[in-house]
Image (cartoon, rainbow, N blue to C red; front, side, top):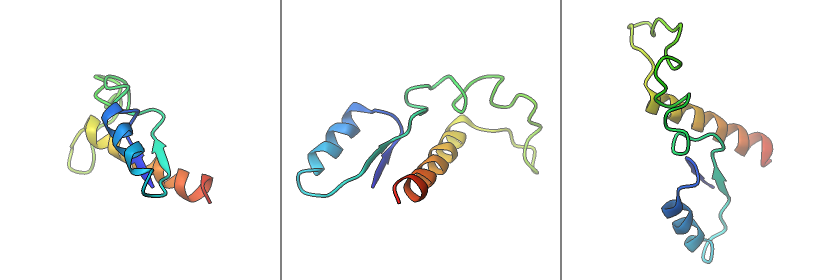
Amino acid sequence: IISQDGNVPEMTSYVNSLKTELTIIQLIHPYSCYEHPNDFPGDSEGRLNDGFKGDSYGNKREGKVTCCKHHFTWMIKTVFQDLT
């Protein structure tokens, strides 16, 4: 299973080249930061930390970390609920 953050042409091409030799399930995150870099959960000024006072150490949310979390959560749900 290969999960990619959006339809990145280079990644898609590479994965397609592997499909001749391997059995691959290719997942493409539907609301990726690659395709929506300035929208939530990416680096959207104001919305990302709007009303968020920070974690227990006072740290604000970071777009790249939030994107990874959303992608990972979506991927796990897709693999274990939708593909089984």
